[in-house]
Image 1 (cartoon, one colour):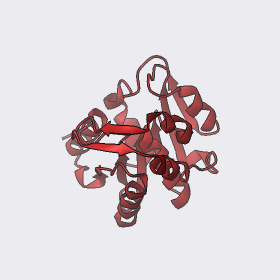
Image 2 (tube, one colour; image 1 turned 120 degrees about the vertical axis):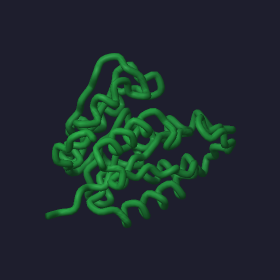
Image 3 (tube, one colour; image 1 turned 180 degrees about the vertical axis):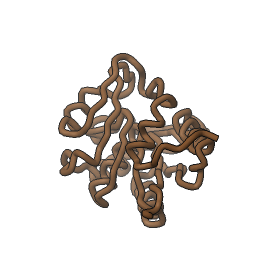
Image 4 (cartoon, helix red, strand yellow; image 1 turned 90 degrees about the vertical axis):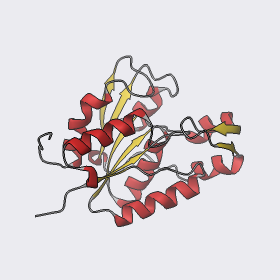
Length: 197
């Protein structure tokens, strides 16, 4: 019998495993007896260090499946293409060089309170991770909400247009209703139907 998948959740810019979606996913996996099948690393703000962290997570995981939100979706796309993995993306960032160039300067993590400086070197490191639209779009499931106040959902809809796209009206960047959709996420990852305990 093949091993169960391992979910690797990638949070977004200035976020952390304390974000609402991360906590909802942890709780959902715990109540289904899947806590050991989920990894939610605290990603470094430097893209080079974040990718190194995620490469280690992938190397150590059985059958990794990537889940990325916002900037985490950008990382997940790069890594899914590099390693031929499945990825579920939630309001993913695209064309990040253009977007992040407007945010240079002091930053603060929303959850840890850590202060740091976003530099041109960080933006260049992000730009280096940009890949063409997925070669095997069947490996990607992309959830967008049109009410995203941070990113223009149309950019992602265009970039991932050959993938399985689910575009919901309204919502926001945090993705309203995520908890209710976790069973779909688990099914996409390849988990059999498991009862909640």
